Length: 299
Image 1 (cartoon, rainbow, N blue to C red):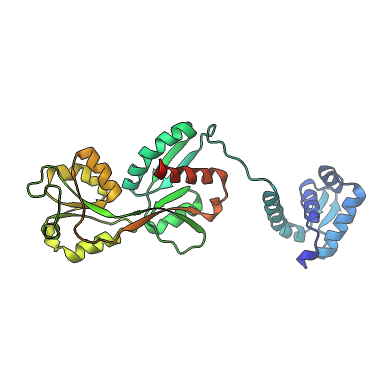
Image 2 (tube, rainbow, N blue to C red):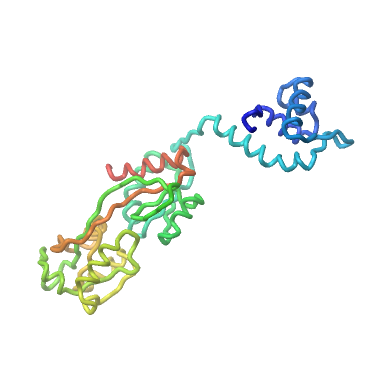
């Protein structure tokens, strides 16, 4: 039975495997020769194999010892990591690169808030923003390619942690000099106007896409754009209406002096979460980055 094996004996096995000498292994472990011999005897009895045989080359491992080596090394590694205190993370001196995954407009919203915080807390820290299809986000988090992800992704795996960041809804944008819309929309005006359609729609924004397709005739969609950020170059030159997430609209309207219009129709909103993988749940650096990213929404 595994529980009948003194796990400290595994260190003896590992040391003899490394040194090929009982004496040298004992010196490395700080154990006497008699205690080493006694420990080796217990190992041989437990595994039913000599494990190490004295030859001209030293204590040569048997095939059984070679088979056990990888497993015993892994057990010792896990024991060592579990007993050691967690490493610390000092953002003030770190030059680490943190990567977050978000949509392009999500990154555009996050970075202006993040950079001033980093300048104060971690001036040498670097940040990388990436995008990925929704179905690949879990793989990106698991591999460590991204420290965290922002969005409305849906995961079924218990290895993904999440934290709600904010609830969001939509509003409408129109150019400042629109010929018929001046600060207010009626339902009739909205449904009969020309619209832009974002396609493919980001994960979590299906409610917007479904409403537009269901309630507005196809000939009213005069343009299809790949991203909400495309609005920057298209809205000032068109009378088309753009229905966008509220935070995106507020930022873009400030840049373009466009009209922001409350929607006269009910479109399901969405929730933005922060996601990270179980592998990095207790990592001090990852934890610090998660906390500073959440702090942006209270800044």
